[in-house]
Amino acid sequence: MELGLKGKRALVMGASRGLGRAIAASLATEGCDLILSARNTERLGMDAAALQSAHGIAVTAIGLDLANATSVQSLIDTIKTLGGIDILVANVGGPPPSGALGVAPDIWQKHFESMVLSLIRIIDGLIPAMREKKWGRILTITSSGVVQPIPTLAMSNTLRAALVTFSKTLATEVAADGITVNVVLPGRIATERVAELDHAAAARAGTSVEDARAKSTALIPMKRYGTVTEFASVCTFLVSAPAAYMTGGMVRIDGGLIQSI
Image (cartoon, rainbow, N blue to C red):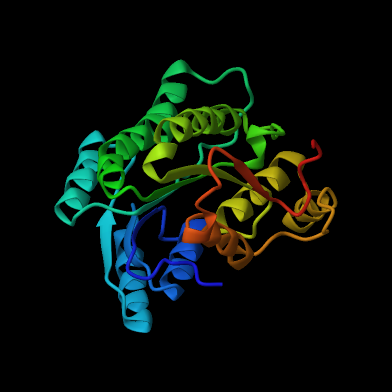
């Protein structure tokens, strides 16, 4: 299938590791020019050079700290000078594990500003160029926790749910401009972030990481974690030309983990 991504320009956030890194690699194979952003600029720069060399595409690396308003505005301004983007893959790191109670208000505020408000600012700043072109794709990576809340991840469940409702509202406002807005819900995908959560679960339970991982895997009908390549392939389709009539939706990539219909 021809995905129609050759020559398009995509911003992939959180591209220095895990899901973001895999999505960037997948888009590169389709001939999509890339803007990669993350806090780890050293690793980001190496990946940018490797992708550009391997696929003959234009790749720009931009340092981004979502907790810093100046950094967020600098990203927006830089992309505007480059001529805007066609695709935004919003991959935002999560907060530390926590329960629903006992978290100080300033901690909630800190993560709300970095996970939710900063992303809204970026979308608000970059979407006008998509509307002018009458073509655009916005894909936000959230979590299975927005449908089936994950114990000990109360902040993540809550804040990522805000991104879902924002995306659904935005989708209705820009659909007539040829822009799709979708959300992807990863389950247990084998990334550094999931490994960190497995270590945290093991520490809380006083068991080994292997036992914690086995307990998690047992809840997945496929009895394994997903790979980043499997995840990235679905995301690449969702931002492609053939996916033009898919908007306002949530797509699960979870091996059947979410139990609700």
